[in-house]
Image (cartoon, rainbow, N blue to C red; front, top):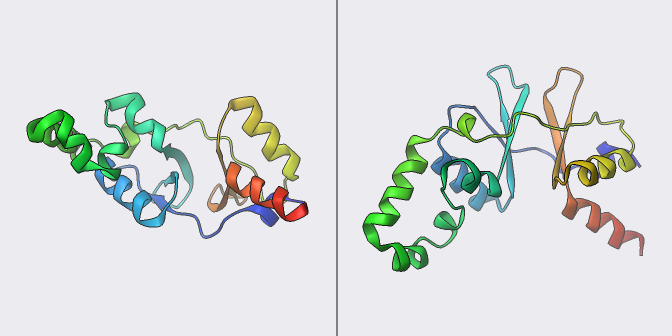
Length: 149
């Protein structure tokens, strides 16, 4: 099997100047764990996952998933401070710009090697110009495995 056979497409992407608040809402609405970041020409320049929110700015993704629950512990001022930080932080400030991507013809075992070697859950599939065509997640690989059983 090849990457193109396992990828989820179309891919969800944003521009680098998108706010964290917008990205979080997009991820929740689409039910996804990552968003690809592209430049104005549509080329892949980064990726943002739920864990990236907390890593750089201290904005837990759970703030968007369960704001009322978090607000009980932080109080309304604490919650508003986190949300204000998310609205003022651009995705380019927290994205991983070292993205391990593959081409559509790449063997699926190479995707698995990348996931294991770099402990990542998402591998973008890009065309010859570096534009995202799809994404392969660990969940996609598990689904493939299940279909073979």
